[in-house]
Each structure stands twice: as C-alpha cells, then as structure tokens.
Length: 204
Length: 204
Image 1 (cartoon, each protein chain N blue to C red):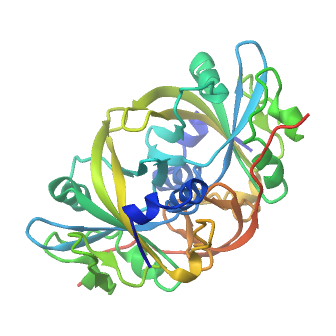
Image 2 (image 1 turned 90 degrees about the vertical axis):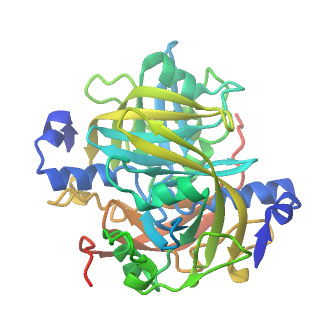
C-alpha cells in the first residue's frame, strides 16, 4: 500500500513514531558508556550509530534534542570520551532496559545488571560481556538545526574484540558473537551470516 | 584482543578499511534511486542510512567525499528528490553490483538487471521488487569538514510498503520480507525477528 504524508500524519502518534523509526531498517543497538564528572558511570542504548569514515577512523551517532537533560551527551561533552559496546543475544533484554530514564545519580550498569570494565586507563566504562568494544574520543558535536538533534562524531582510539570474531582480512564477524539487529524502537532480531561478496566491478 | 591505533594503522590498508567499516555493526543496505537532469536513472547502494527524527519524518545518510563525480549526490542536489529501497534476499547480489562504478550515461537498473518503477509522478525511480520504498525530498546537504563527507538529510514524502509486513501498531516487519542486513563492505546476513520488547521503564 501507499502511505502519503497525510496518511502518516493521521496515524495514532505512537504508531506513526514506530513506523518512521522502522524505515531506516536494521541497526546494531550499541550501549554507549560514559562517566559523569561527578564519577557516576552511565550506560545508554543508541541505535543510530553509523560509519563515517575509515581514515581517520570516525563513527557518527545521533543524540535526541538537548532540550532536556541528556546524561550521555553531557558526559561526552564534559569528558571528551565514550565507549560503544556491541549488544548480543545473551543480554539484549538488559541492554533494552538501559533505554529507561534512570535518576542521574544512579548507574545503569547496576540498575540493569550489566558488568562494567575499565581498559587501559580509558576514563569511560566498557560493557564487560560485549564481544566488540570501541573507545572513542569526541571530535565534534554538530547541532542539526532542522530538528534540534545532535550529531556526535568520535574518533576511534582503540578497540577490544573477541579473537574468534576477527578474521584475517579485518572482517569482524559480529553475527558469530550473537550480535542482535534492531528495527525501530522495540524489535530485536537474530542474525546469521549468509555471504560475503566480491568487490563489485563494472563490466559490459 | 586489544587493537590500539598503532595496531590498526599497521594493518594492510584493505584489511583496515574492512575492519573500520564493520565496527558500526549491522546496517540495512538501501538502494538509492535518482534521475539525472539529462534523464538517466541511477541506482546506488548505500549502507549508512539512519533515522534522524519522526516529526518531521527525516532520514539521514552519508555520501563519500564529493572530490570525484558522485552521480547520486549530484542528482539529489540537482533534482531535490530521491528514493530509498529496501534490499532483500531475492536480489541482494544484484544490489551489491550497483556499488560498481558505472559510466554516467548508463543506468544501473539495466546494468544490474533491476526493474524500476515510477510512482505518483515522483521524479526519482523506485526498485519494483522492493518491499519497502521511501520517497524523499532533499532538505539539506551538510558538509562534514572533518573528513569531507556529506550528510544528506531528506524528508519522507510517501512510502510504499507491502501490506503483509506492516502491522497494526505501525511496525514494519522487514525481516518477514527477507530484508538482509549488511556488515562492512561485503557481508550480507539473513535476519529473523526474535522479540519485540515492552517500553523500558525505570523501577527500583
């Protein structure tokens, strides 16, 4: 069926939000680890994390508008560092719980029952059980005036990756680690590697 | 294992690019349909498509640097419209082929053997067999100085979605349509819906 803007606007608000959130397709939900200046560890679930460039290695993610308190965004700006942690099928329910609004003086690690890990004197906390952990340094927060969201751009400082999922050619086989894919606000999926295809070349 | 920046820089260039492209996790590869001002239909595979906001309904995507000819980016700027088309397991190999560099006067639709569809007088072409098609109007191209990439922000004008994958609460069950998830530059995955979780609430 075709849904034009009027049809979409006429949907019940939560249903419309659900639909629009689904349209960009699969994402890797990522737990973002930060530490506040007062020393509280924070963990938040983000689903709009994307590759921005390989050289320098940059990752982008979108934060909702900074019109209310956003612990993660504020911690990133204040400390300049954060972590991304891959979510797999052994703890995606706990990760989902981190999208709840916790009091500012309470750590989602404890609240959701997720164990933290500190690596290499890096200030921000990692998720111990995650098969892929990325340490990022903030490069830029770009305010997107069009809808008041914030584009957070970070540069990769180091990664911690389970040996079994890193192949010789640099491929990170996250499906092998049981990493889940999300769609929209609440749907989690099992994923299985199907094919790796050869570099596409033009031919007549 | 831990890979710090020196370890990553020391990797063979293609392996490093492969790894960095994998770190943001699963994506929905999307075929981007455009038409040039001279009338050539263009189809290109993008994997950094993300939700930017539900109200107004905005989708973001990243284009590589505009330092060489980028047909898709140029067509979007010139015509102000483009389409996103979900890729499923019935044609992901053909979609992958659209990442090859075709001559400017040749349509990837014909080159890769993908049938186009025109809907509602919208100027940009859709992919006929796609279960989810999104018509977008360009709102803004934001140059990201940090690595010369371009953030393309579009507003949803209408969508065409297979009846069977749209549920009553607005959820688009793209896994049911066989939509594939990609990781990095060349890996395609089968996906199966596991769970939809309730809205997360804080409780002591």
